[in-house]
Image (cartoon, rainbow, N blue to C red; front, side, top):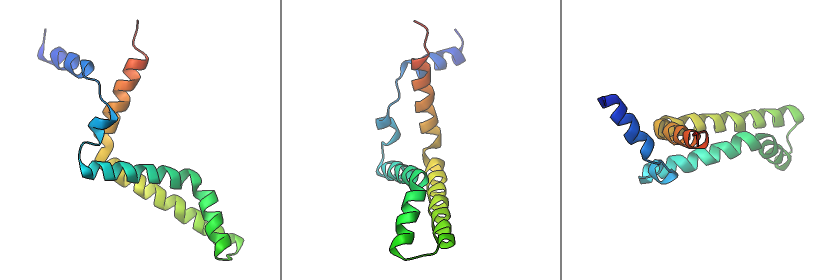
Length: 103
C-alpha cells in the first residue's frame, strides 16, 4: 500500500465529531458566533421588524434595519467560518461519507 492510501484509510476510520471542532475555548466561542449568525441571517426580517416597530421607524428605515441585521449576520458567519472552516468541512465530509457509504 502506498503512503497516500494509508493516510486515506486512517482519516476515514477516525470519526470526526462536534467535540473535535470545538476543542478550545476560542473555537467554542467561534461556534457560538456562528450559531448567532445563523439566527441573524434567517431571522433578519423578524428581528428588523421588531426593532423598527419599537423605534417607530418608517417602512424604508425598517428595510434598512433588516438589511443591517442581515449584513451583520453574514459578517459574523464568514468571520467564524474563517476559524472553523477546515474542521467544519472535514466533519461534514465525514458525515456525508458515512451517510452514503455502500453497505
